[in-house]
Image 1 (spheres, rainbow, N blue to C red):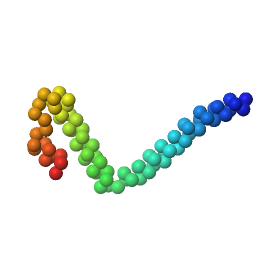
Image 2: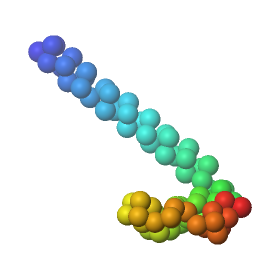
Image 3: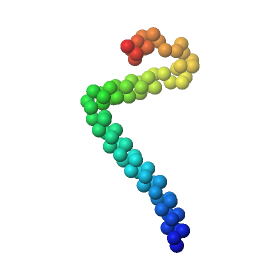
Length: 77
């Protein structure tokens, strides 16, 4: 019986430890992202990445002329 309990504890302990770690990490990340400027930059970069993923698909990049000069300056000032 003791061996079975030891086995169950060995299975549950990593799950509980990982859960606690992720909860603490998310709480710390949420506190850091609460800054208005940082959140604004994060949203801007996410929107920029989404726009570039839509514009530069694999077919467009491989069949086209690559990045246009005005696009480079638009995304990287």
